[in-house]
Length: 56
Image (cartoon, rainbow, N blue to C red; front, side, top):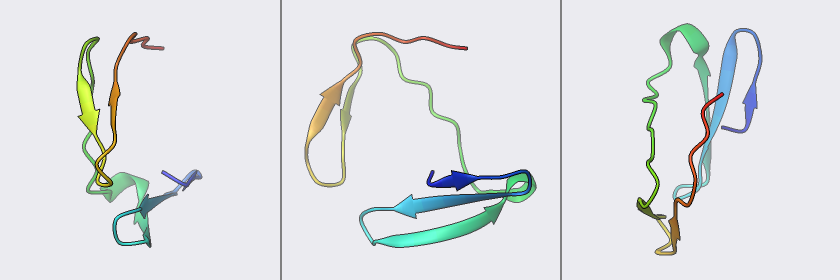
């Protein structure tokens, strides 16, 4: 997410270089929760591991 205001959210999709603007009330976005020990692979092929999870 690049920007959020009271009504809209702007999302950058790095693989395509595209920015999209969505209504917060109707954005096709899914929350993903990672756990300690998860390995996440980017679209560029690099990976990162989740060492710690904090929820506020």
